[in-house]
Image 1 (cartoon, rainbow, N blue to C red):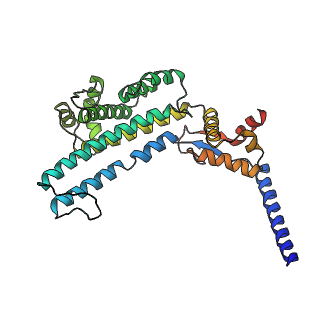
Image 2: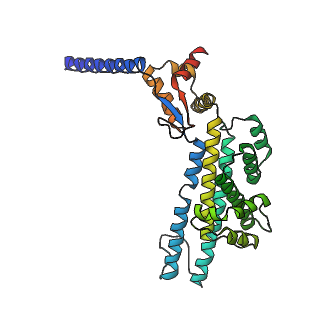
Image 3: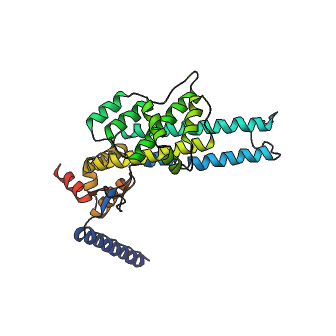
Length: 317
């Protein structure tokens, strides 16, 4: 029995040693993989919050339509009562509540994206932009205007998406805040009117003149208007994100991500460098890939980082 156990332990030891040796060969004689940054973790968080907003909205409205046309009772596991006097009227009010709430959620997600860009590790590289963003305080409209002014993207569609976002912000304010009668800046109103035909193409036939009239008369947004505004905000964030990533110092950003991870989990460079090379490199790769770095290059301007450069900088410290 003792010899059997000893032989088993010896076999495991040989197997472990062979694995370590093979890992050493892989990392010693082959280049470490290159990692690209195609989408920021800030945009991934944005998409997680708003990515299926239109699907959720449609699902809720389908449910309301079923309530209108069928004899529906409150489920027994709901610890409340539900017996509207006028079911059709209740459905109409609930529908508008969902539409207004969906628009408000989209604007809040846009605000959160701008705020995350200014949190460590920072996605914003330009100090002037950082200072201006810090001066906007909590105003999402001011944040939008600051980003637009700095980015200066002279693309027709970008101007349309910015204008749609500006409209969504003011419409959200008017539907959510008591006594609010906000107006959209003339620049963005004119932009929407100038590209009336293009907007119909981009947003499945949306009549922007009718939309602006509804906004200016204090009406609530329709289903088509809300889904179009949400889509416009999505496209705006996509274009802003690509621009910020194109000018970021990729090495600085990667180091900041790793530093942030180390502080969160109370790790040190020395402790990581002391690991076997395969475990050390795998750890670094996992940290970066969990923060939006990937092995494929999706866009022409996608930047890459070499893991060897990171490790070499640590060894020099």
